[in-house]
Amino acid sequence: MFTYVELFAGIGGFRSALDQLGGICTFASEIDKFATISYRAMYDGAPELHGDITKIDAKDVPEHDLLVGGFPCQAFSVAGQRKGFGDTRGTLFFEIARIARAKRPKLMFLENVKGLLSHDKGRTLDIMVQTLNDIGYAVDFSILNSKFYGVPQSRERVFIVCSRDVEPEAWSIEGNGVLAKAKRRLQAMGARTFNFDWPKNGEVMTRLRDILEPEVDEKYYLSPDKTLKLSEEISSKSDSVRVVGRLAEVNGHDICKRVYSAESVAPTIPTGSSGNTTPKILQRPRGRNSSGRVYDVAPTLTTSAYEHNNYVLEKFTVIQKTHSTTTTVKYDETGTLQAARLDKVPQVVTESTSRYRIRKLTPRECWRLQGFTDDQLDKARSAGVSDSQLYKQAGNAVTVNVTHAIAQRLVPMIKSQEEVTEWVV
Image (cartoon, rainbow, N blue to C red; front, side, top):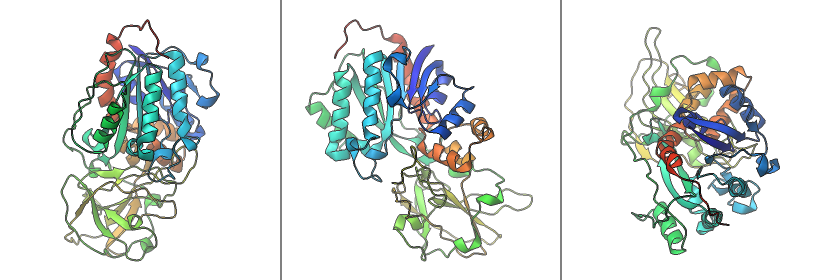
């Protein structure tokens, strides 16, 4: 057994993983009122859940072995205005440092967007690592993609592990990507580092079709006038996020017009606020006695610059055939859907209004893409949480499968570490 504190808890993406590994949550903090409703419903009332972390005195936080949190990241994302520490939410990282300095947990386990590594030419990350070093922690970080951990969503995130009682060692750095460049820069600055045993990427085993509901309420379908002819056909590999076409009659940025395929992984679940700001996929219509076959996978849900509470979800949209005529559709390999402003709404491309229907992914499907169980979704919904809030909560969450894979390697470190007698300040 070990104890942990979950800051910026959302709907418990860390907690859902840590509880499975014998963890006991002694304190949690979340400011969004709707997320707290879901959290309490999902975790037996969660009496340990508190509100705004900036208003909590560190002495009121119980002692704990592990501090976890996906601290607000939009200030560091490409979709934002790159305000970094100039944004109030950017400074919330220092709330983590404040609690860690006072309570001295053995380990910390944090999450943020990939853009953190290059934000402000690396200065943001440099300050964070220096701060963590200053309060006594050696640091390691890596980029992991959810699609390699059992969910059909291409979602790259930075994960940071900090240890108070580990022998510092130089990083083993390979390649020349954004991760390697960040580590080389920090190592040259003399950062206190260590090599965490990160999980290795496996095969992409799941596709979007694997998490779709067999029966979906009519309210999730868009009206026929939203469907337009496919503007192009292209080819792709099977394990990538695929674009199958673009809407020719939609205003806005190109990413708002993309239609995605479904025999591969979904794009990142974004934090967007509009029901229209969603990636799309193709799906064969269901007959009365047979289930439909999904052709294509939507892209990862991306972040939007729209600011409301914490984050907003950019929902997927599904394109579904309505008769048995088949057509050959080829795909083009593409990366994660880019972040978009609220007024740049992704649209769907279809062959004709008679051949396809369009629907959004349901909240249940989006929660599944983040590794949450149907039972957890049902508890949140029974507590009165609306679809719009359920979408937002999914887009703002950390993927449970990924936190579980990392935590499996982290928990043994908690159990093996001895109390430190000298505190570095």
